[in-house]
Length: 338
Image (cartoon, rainbow, N blue to C red; front, side, top):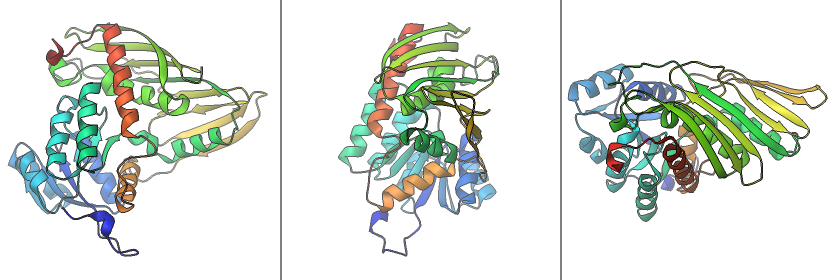
């Protein structure tokens, strides 16, 4: 594999992306990569016809009929893992052991033990492994962190957020299939959990209640947490009913209200406790906004760095451990845990 960090200053070689598992999220990611002018050189699928169709749609030079062929491709520097999260560990390890950097779709894995495995293999091989929590890299989230760091909100005391959607109820759908890591928590709840962690720091105490569907996968979850600073978060997620999908950060001097859909490019307002509007922000982004995480990954590689400041692997592991705790409280177990 070409060491992308060794490119000459001012004339960097393109960092070449490979797409593993060309499903719906891979289509959105690839469109955003190409919108940003980034280089996609290969795609790999379990079926050659699927890979070929995806490659033809996006003008990708190499189409591979297996994931093993994809990670062995010498024209690939970094692999985007877009398979169901039940397979993230196996596919990330496959790529890392082939010497490729990885950007792994969220949630990073099924549980914390699997996340540790990815972290340790990447560290041992001096490769970048990064969770694709793309929301953290969006412009409005960057601005929100700037406002908090500047003290505009005063002491931040609470975060409230929901990720609620009306999604398929078919028991065979991946969202409801326990063997694929089904459940609203890992598919949807990961967004507000990661968001609250980002704003308030680690969760030190977590309480969770929820409802399980016909397959034993969670369909609704309510989470209340205390964070290391003493601040609290309130999170709701559902795969059976669509809610407002807004988020709020409440401080002693002001609050931030993030509009629908808070985890995508959107707008927010900063309002002082006396009702004065301090700032209004509107994001205008080409595409869905998934390119910002890829741009961060490329910058890290060019700088010879192997971890993200915005979402270090240690934090991804810790978030997975919190999700493990929540699942235990709900009584949700996956087949591998039985």
